Image 1 (cartoon, rainbow, N blue to C red):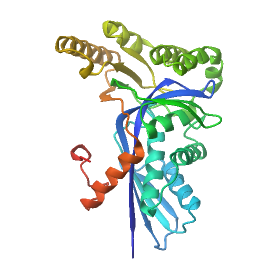
Image 2 (tube, one colour):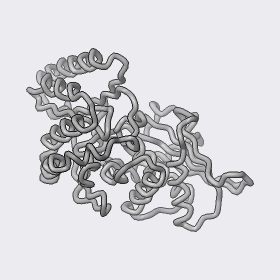
Image 3 (cartoon, rainbow, N blue to C red):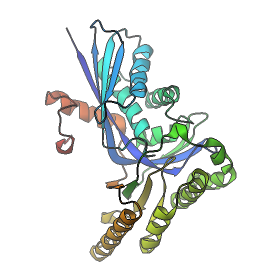
Image 4 (cartoon, helix red, strand yellow):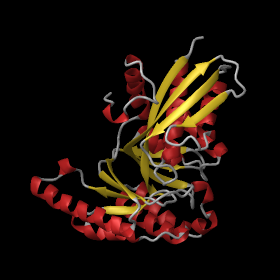
Amino acid sequence: MKIQKGYGCAFGGGTIVNAIATWSGCAYATEMKTYAEVLLHEEKTSRRIVGSVFENEKTNPHLIELCVQFVLEELDCSKKASVLTRSEIPIAGGLKSSSAAANACVLAALDALGETMEPSDIVKLGVRAAKEAGVTITGAFDDACASFYGGVAVTENKTLTLLKREEFHYDVFVLNPGKAFSSETNVSRSVLMKDLVQIAFDSAFVGEYKTAMKLNGLIYCGALGFNPEPAVSCMEIGEKFDVVAGLSGTGPSFTALFPTSDSLGKEQNEELNVLKEKIKLNWKLQYPNAAVFETKTSNKNAYEESVRFSKFMKENQTDLKSVNLKNMKF
């Protein structure tokens, strides 16, 4: 029996402006990734597509199954499939894990078929799957664009329009206190703030991303009942370096943007590193059980990254369950 293997990966991210209140959003990509493996076969099985999540087999695989299903339907393929995802991104944290999974699975399914699509169609297919799976409110087109194209993306989610995409260079801290599912968000409270969110979006549209991120974080913390102290204290400690922080997605995670080390001199880097440690300690005091991650923004394209990932996996004749993600170089 011939099995066709395909691989894909896409990036997580953080929020500049959440689109729930106005349908207009802005998000950026980070180097944290989700990987996907799709196997196509013709075995007699009760289910056409079977999905699983490496980190937790109890996680609902409906989203990743739909992504593969939609690709097979789009390309008129009658084969059956299994799909596996493996991720560096905490789920249900507002860190774009669903968008990364959707993009990665669509890319992996296309790779298994030896086919491709226009980038915009790949993104929209994942957004459609996310909507049908009920893991998003607006479709998270802003998150999906950031995850796929890299950098920072400004979008109109109702019309699925990418308004602009720019390079975005920062070091990133992530505070992840736990889980909060987007589908359970209080939309009506968020919509009450739409005039204020529009001000944040207008700032993002003209490239004032830090102002937008500050406003968005404070507004949505108020609407959704999160304490803004992690963001405010972070900005207070990092004020000298214009550090900005805010709520990501619908929470509960917060992200913070720092100048990259290569943009500073030796003494400045040393001073900033002391402040970074102070911020991490402060966060740990506020949330003793929270996880704190350090990463960077990513300006890479998920399609190009997936081509490299697929080549690595096939040349090394390995599979997603057994590969050591930390040692992968492609």
